[in-house]
Length: 541
Image (spheres, rainbow, N blue to C red):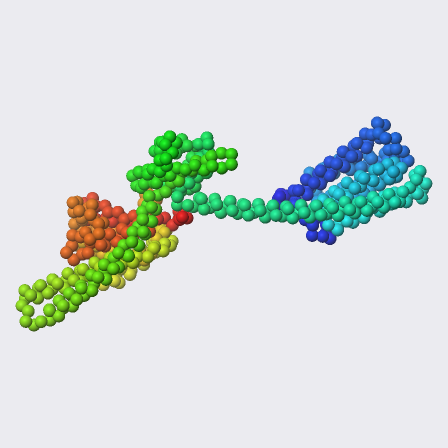
């Protein structure tokens, strides 16, 4: 197979190159010219409708030269079609055919006075384009020698009425000039072709890069033409709209989106809307894009969870600035209170009732100090550094470290992992803090003597995302407090701070994940972490 991006070097003595397909096209054009020229000369001669000097000095030589020229020109098309032999050999053969036939035709017609010397100028120009380089100059030299040889032969044989060596010399000079011009044009064309090829490569690379970015954006992009046919869409559109196949027209999209799109056409000032479904929400924005010749419609789709992640990062930054000062102001008097209580407890004159009061002061001082520590930890939270994690391996390492931290813990948890490989895009340290908090709560509030707590790792059947569940079989969360379970400072324990689940949910949202609570059918609690799938590669902008 012949590839258009390959190039040929027809002249072995120069660096001139010509694109493969372009070279064969030019050679076919020159072969067609030879066919037309030979057919026209044969027609004029055999039907006696041409000038009288055609073959006037050597009729038999003219006749056989024209016939051989005609047959060779038409037969060459077979070799051009099959491209055998190679281009360089066929190019030289075509040029050589003219260098052999045309001087004989000139001689048979009576010399250069008839004006057929110009035919060799066409051959020399063609050689500059087809072969180029030093070979083209050699062909110009052969053409010059051939016209001089014709004049010399006519002079020696007294075949012509008169000879003109000066005219032959002028033709030779013109051949060299034409050859040099053809070489210059060919080199310029070569440079232009190379530049165009490089520009084509750059454009192809840029187009491929643009397609990659568009296809892997977290935001969905949908472009419609003026007839509302879908011109472009990325994979995020299919994921956000939960479509199995790529739509081709507007009517293939969900009904809710079509309804809001038509409302936007009637009222262009209302160009944003939020679509809600059972599992998530999608923010939709409509826009016009004026291009040359037509106006396109652009529909942007974005997961509301992405908005929440950005808002969460901004919220944490604001909280950090606020709490840093407050915590400092509280900790100074708190330290004084705690130290004073400790000194007071060392007084031997205190009775049991006073010691109980001192104990209350110490306990609540420690609790307030823990609250301040948790708030500071949350406010100082850095942006998540998400990476691709093998969840089965990560969960195994986490559980081993968790057992080491909780001395005496052996089989309090049962681990259930599906066989399929699951990869999540999450900050490992922040995920560890979330799961550690849930497991600690399961041990503290959900431990029973009947059943162990459980950790499940699986792919969510509806959302198609890696999911971790921490399940306990304790008393569970009372129904009247379910709405407050993730609120800050809400706790049903006298020793808790009420920030554990709140921090866990904030960290989950920071990683574009979600933390959900679900009550078990019989008893206990089920906390579910739905993570971002690392296999669904996206580009955040």
